[in-house]
Each structure stands twice: as structure tokens, then as C-alpha cells.
View 1: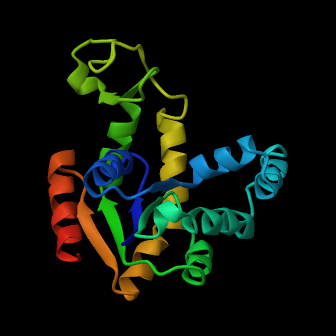
View 2: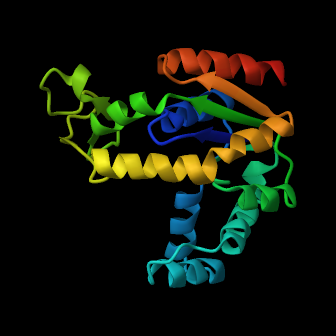
Length: 209
């Protein structure tokens, strides 16, 4: 099964992605990860992407699509995969349609006011990446999982968060209508607990087997 995971920053995509990987053993394909892999390995497409990044430019859609196409052609994706962070725009979605068939788009829907609170209150472990919220830390400054130091990401401040949400609303949110029209969207209320979200997603995925 080929899946896309959609949702605004702070909606809980990362948490749900981990749960889907654990439960269904699908490869989790993040464009950020495959960019870094190709750049590290100095592949031709990686060097091309790096030439844009080094100039502070956005990597063109055609380059991003080529990197995604190469990744989903690998053996571990023959029984399905989960795309996270791609497509981000209608143009990318249309390009993706030319290289693969998407079976399901999971859209984790959360009101922007809640996302602002979530992101500005988020703290991340420097060692293992586990995330917490100030409201639940009760003054604790260490990770409950590994004991690592917790910190606030530089982009988790009100101004930057508002900007990220605005970009998402302008560029990525239109994908909801795009995939709704294709009949493959599955909207999930992300304002509940991660466990509740995963229960709904699992029921949907199990029904499609």
C-alpha cells in the first residue's frame, strides 16, 4: 500500500509515522532524509540538489521528484511505502501521479490555534529526539526515555510558527481538496491523543488489506 501522510507542522505526523512503521513495517520516506542521503553519498542528483541548497535556493520540483522516484523504486518499497513531506504542492502531486499510484492519503487535521500552542510549548531531547510539551513536563528538564537534555528548537517560536503555518496553508493545504477529488483522502482529528489517532488510522489501513 502506498500512503501519503499529510498535516500541518505540529499536527503529529512524526508520531503517527513511527506508529505506522512499527505496526505495518512500511518504509518511511522523508524527503529531508533522502536529500541528506544523496548529498552524503555524493550521487549526481544529490550534488545537483546541493548546488541549489548551498545558494539558499529551493530545490526545483523536478529534482525533488527524481530523488523520490529513485527511492520508491528500491526493493524495500515493492510492497508499499509511506511518503512524509512530499508532495508539498499541487505541482509535486501531479508529478507524483506520473510515477506511482497512491492508495491512501492520511490527513491529520488540527486547528491552527492548537498547533501554535503545541509548537511553541514543544521541547525536544537532544539525544534521542523524543518530544514533550511544557504543560506535561512539570519543570522537568531531562528526557524520560534516555535522560538527555531537553531544548526548544529555534523555529518553535510564535513568529516562525505563524510563518510556517501560513506557508502550509498556502502551498500544502490545497492538496486536501486535490486528493479528496481523487477519492483517496482519509481525514483524522489530530486534536485528540496520539493513541486515538493511531487507532483510527489502523482501522482504516486494516480495512484496505
